[in-house]
Length: 480
Image (tube, rainbow, N blue to C red; front, side, top):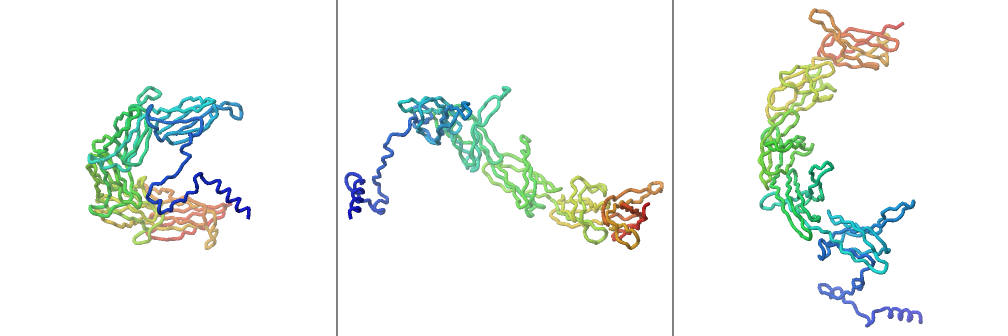
């Protein structure tokens, strides 16, 4: 029975002098000011180095400052190096406990950076007021005279300097966004303030005085346009369109953006004025002039006055589409065999977007080339089959008639033509191997096929008819 009484006596001795206070209930404390003792705030600040940042001497403490204290000390090899001893912030003041001696103090607040040497005495604390000699500048960005905010503007502060060659230049001191306003702490001096919103930019000279808090509004006088392209006026919006925009007076370089595969609209934020907007999709393009008004949001439709043409190639007539063909659209007066560097394929078909009018569509499969002219109107979607007037030939080398094909055979095919004098001329149109057999698509005409392997060789003349599908057996003669 003595142990519980002893514990009770110890607990009673630890209670505050003046008796035991009964805490009020939560309901009684809610909404009413009450006494809450905090002895820690009445104690002197700890440490022997007390730092306080101010914009100018004698002002109240200025928040947002980072404090770093460095000291020169030997490293593991005895070489003297600057060592970080203490760090604090961002805040208005900092307290450190350091050994007496000499230190380097570094202070930073936004674009303000200071460095000084301090000496901490042996028998006292050092209280230092760090004068930033700076001012506070708040920038606002709007897009019209009524003050409509530029809600995602990027702000920069630039300072005039000279480069290594003595030429005038501007360097960025600070930058931040994206929002309608930004706050900067800057050393006293003259600067250029810049705001960017979309493709609109404005620069203004600003003056920052030590200890001053100033504001500057940058009116970009900008508007927003959302551009779409259609095949014809009032048609469905197209994806994958390339839009190029430039001031009509040519005072700036052109800007090019492409809508994504799943997007049909491209948006621009531009300073007020007249712009040339060009929409390009494949072979079709159209240009319009747009007037951008400050603070306005416009939807612009650019009709390409174009049509879609899907093309495939056949051996002849209504046969199936050939795989691995190349396709192109060329001027109507171009050579039927012409293919440009922008040809599509190899593929079984291709789709082109072309301006309304007459066009020549070319298809090539190996040596076989065909073309067809087509006339299209705005908004049309057409399918075109191109007859190559060709046949398919399967070549194989056999040791004897009806025998098994010889593997690892090299095949060469020559077309037989005649020159203006009627003399026979041979032109090689196929030269590949090593296969047991090979399929070749050839234009209608006369040919000679050669096949050779390690110990066998054969040749044979044959004729190709449009749409034909023949197998040519080359029977080998034994080589000695």
